[in-house]
Amino acid sequence: MNPQAKMIFTASLLLGTTITITSNHWVVAWTGLEINTLAILPLISKSHHPRAIEAATKYFLVQAAASTLVLFSSMTNAWHTGQWDITQLTHPTSCMILTAAISIKLGLVPFHFWFPEVLQGTSLTTGLLLSTVLKLPPITLLFMTSQALNPTLLTILAILSAAIGGWMGLNQTQIRKILAYSSISHLGWMTIILVYNPKLTLLNFYLYALMTSTVFLTLNSMKVLKLSTLMTSWTKMPSLSAISLLTLMSLAGLPPLTGFLPKWLIIQELTMQEMAPSAMIISLLSLLGLFFYLRLAYCATITLPPHTTNHMKQWHTNKPVSMLIAVLTTLSIMLLPISPMIFAII
Image 1 (spheres, rainbow, N blue to C red):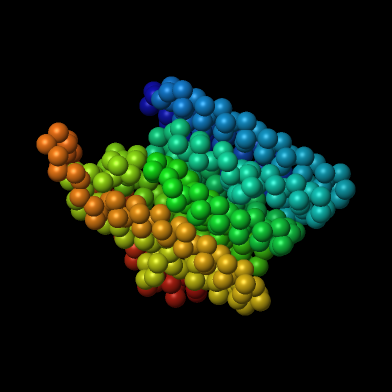
Image 2 (spheres, helix red, strand yellow):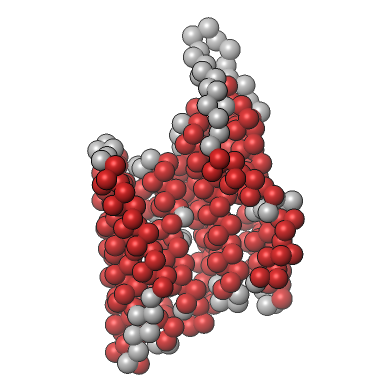
C-alpha cells in the first residue's frame, strides 16, 4: 500500500476515535464510528487476498448494522425524552438497543461470530488495530451510558463471553483466532463490572490493550501465524521468544504479573456488590483462557522442532528487538508492584 494512503487511513482512525470519545451528541459519536469503519476497511483488504476481501466485507456489513442500531437507539431516546446528549440515555428500549449495538461492535457473545473470521483474514498489525484502537470508542460509549444500562443483561453477556471466548479458543491452531477469542474473553471481564465501577472497565481495557499489543508486535517481529511455526521460531529470536512466555502468562492473569491486577480488582468489587457467585463463575471460566495461553507459551519456549533431515530450521537473526516491544513487554510484566499508585489514581 502507498505510504501516503496508509498515513491518511491511520490519521482517519485516530480522528474517528477522538471524535467519538470526546463527543456529547449522539450524531457526532456516530459520525466518529463511521469514520473508523471506513478508515480500517482499506487496511483490512490491502493484501488483495480473497480471504482479506471476505474479512473486509464481513466487517463492513456487521459494523454498518451496529451503527444503524446506535443511530436508531439514540433517535428513539430523543423521540421520548427530547435529549440527544449521550449521558441522558434513559428510555429502557433505547438502552436495550444500544447494548445490542455496542455488543455487535465489540464482538461480545452472542454477536461474536464475525470477529475471529475478520482477524484471521487480516495481517497482525491490522489485527492489533482491530483488537485495541477500534474497541476504544464503543467502550467509551458504554462508559458514558453505564448508569442507564441493565446490570442483569450485562452480567449474562459477560459470563457468556468469558465462557465462549475460553471454550472456542481451546482447539485453535491459528494464532490470530486464538487472540480473537482471547479478546472476547477479556471483554467479558470488562462488561461484568461496567455498571458497578465503570473506571475499572477502562483500567481493564487499557491494561488489556497494553498486553495484547505486546503479544501482537512480538508475533509480528517473529513472523508467526500458526502454532506449528511458533514451535520453530525460538531459533530465530531466542530472547524474544523466551520473554513472550511471561507476556502470555500476564495476559492470562497470573500473579504477580500485570494482567492479575484488573482481575483482582474486579473480583474484589463484585464481592463488595454481593455478586460473589458471578465472580466465582467468571474466575473459573478464565481457566479456559489460561489453558490456551499455556499452550502458546509451551509451543513458543518449551518444545523442540523435529530433528528430521529434511526439516528446515529458521535462520537466527541478529536484528535487535525494537525499543517499543521492549518497553511494552516490561510494562506487561512489571506493572503490578506499582498498583498502590494506580489505586490512588482511581
